[in-house]
Length: 251
Ligand SMILES: O=C(O)c1cc(C(=O)O)c2c(n1)C(=O)C(=O)c1cc(C(=O)O)[nH]c1-2
Image (cartoon, rainbow, N blue to C red; front, top):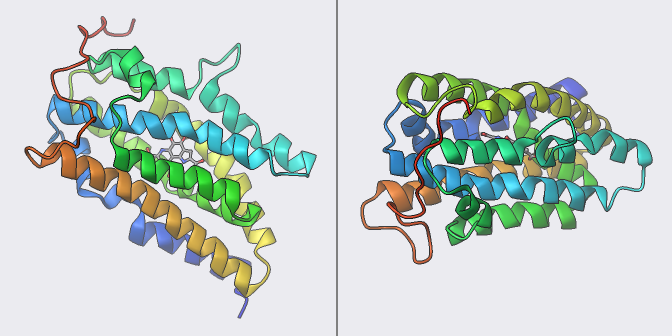
């Protein structure tokens, strides 16, 4: 049976309650100060691959949209990450975090040290958005419903526990606190409106579930490789390499 708008929204939110990556042990370690500097660096390197891929996924989405109004509503996502003349953008902000943890930003930007498992998970998301229905693609972005909470917890946890954390190095997350709610308000309304049969609601819920798996799998890979001793996969970043002296704070 097709669910009411309210019941369907509650179903989508419940997927976050049960499956969002704020519950992953790696995030608990990171936010509580339990990560070593090298584990933080491994997270910065691998998560950059997600950051770099998000605007490509949004471009893939827009390339399939025939409705100019939908493209218009969507395009700010690309600018939020790639930047504009007035806004440096999320990718540059993430590289500021890379500077702050003492990594060579060109190495991070090259994505050379990213684990294969990270690439498999993130590339699966880009492909999903390229190949599935527009409804499933928009529904998959709705993990952002749950992101402001984790970004706020991350800002607080990192500031409390790590020397590298300050307004400059964490500016990525502060910006997302205002960018994500605007995107997700639009995306949620679009999904609730367009998922007007049981079949479509099931497909949208499955897409959101898939996306929680994409996020969870990235942290599984990080935990397995960099928390377990001796488990770094071939080709992935080796602690002690590609470091530069941390730039002066707030520069
Ligand atoms: O730090 C996080 O936990 C987190 C999660 C997610 C998410 O839920 O997909 C995104 C982001 N951050 C993020 O910064 C971001 O720009 C973003 C875009 C998207 C998307 O699917 O379009 N998700 C996310």
